[in-house]
Image (cartoon, rainbow, N blue to C red):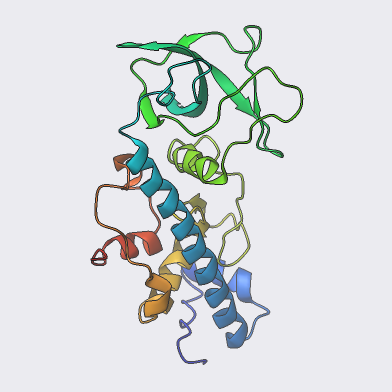
Length: 246
């Protein structure tokens, strides 16, 4: 076996059946290469989400809709019911926060002006603020609409996955590239990868002594929202348990 590769699990176990289904035609070299590739995807995803969450924490002292004072205010990202939504504000003052859910084109990232016919005015006064002001203002335009920053879309997906509103967009396991029905595939809100639990546990063992893949260490501070604390994958959990950067 290639040094560093994880030994294949017993074929009598659920883990073994899933792994065998994924790797039945692969040599150990193929398994090790798949593990190394999945670790790269995991590390890159974790870093991108970390940057989005740390940026969110820095912005949380800003007022809803940004400093203003003129309308339209900046869009905000809010948790409304069981969904994360972008909100175009009609009126924000004191304990009053009213606005309309703003749709974003998934292909172009353009924010589309919410009309009264398509998006009724709602109260968001008691809703959780995910990001108070995302840096763009929506206007009545057919062309050259403002685009939502990629980091903000990644931030939204943290809540989408945690609230299970879009957790099955990519049901294939990042490690074995299959969605074997013998074991469910779960999405992690932090790295935003999809895993069979057995694949993720095996990958964590494979990475245990690879210090590079655990870098950078997590920054200090409460930048991980409580909503996702118990939902992160084994790899992200192992990373979170490591000492913070100094």
